[in-house]
Amino acid sequence: MRIRVLVRVSTVLATAATAAVITVSSSSQASATTGPDLSMTGSVVSGVKSVEGGTGQQLAMSFVVKNNSSSQSADISFNFTFGHANVQGYICPLVSNHFDINPDGSSCEPGTLGAGKSSGASVIVVAPSGVSSTSVKACAQNLSGAIDPVSSNNCKTLTVAVVV
Image 1 (tube, rainbow, N blue to C red):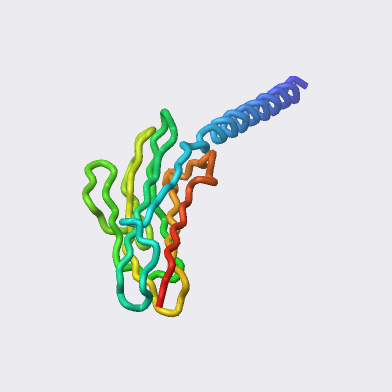
Image 2 (tube, one colour; image 1 turned 90 degrees about the vertical axis):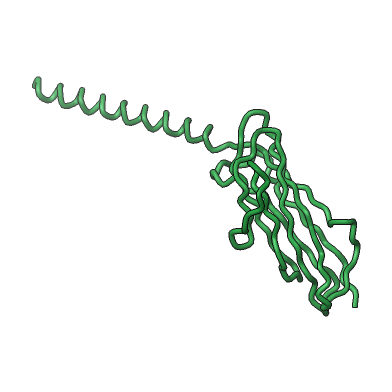
């Protein structure tokens, strides 16, 4: 009889301990996954409104990501996608010292951006012939995997008319 009571007490204690661990893990995971709000802005360099397609005429587009947090830093990435644009080059300066680095595919990963700080990256493209516009979309990402609480402001698309 005494053995049964000890087994039951052990089972109850083990179940309670497991529930406590699961509760603590769940609550710490929920708070750890919310990161800073990153926002993206951008502009076409020199205010260009249209380019001639199929001629190799270069077009530069510049983007800036801002960390809107007052306390959290973010390991940032600029992820670029292109619409009717042939990439000629990237300008990816590091956050720390503004040294220009090579992109990682179609992304720039300039490093850790402090709270309230901004960092930029640019692309140079040419428009092919036979299209009416060319565009570049840049999206900010926190590489730590933390969820951006306002993801609607993470991307900016710039579009320029293409003429014949």
